[in-house]
Image (spheres, rainbow, N blue to C red):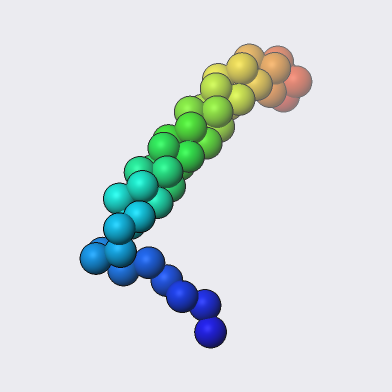
Length: 46
């Protein structure tokens, strides 16, 4: 059975910070891709 980090684990803060940072990075990259590809998709549909 896998062991999960609980709030009292010493590395819990770092795992939470890492997950939040990676999530924000992924969201930023995703929005950048959408902004870059929007003009191309609108030209292709006309």
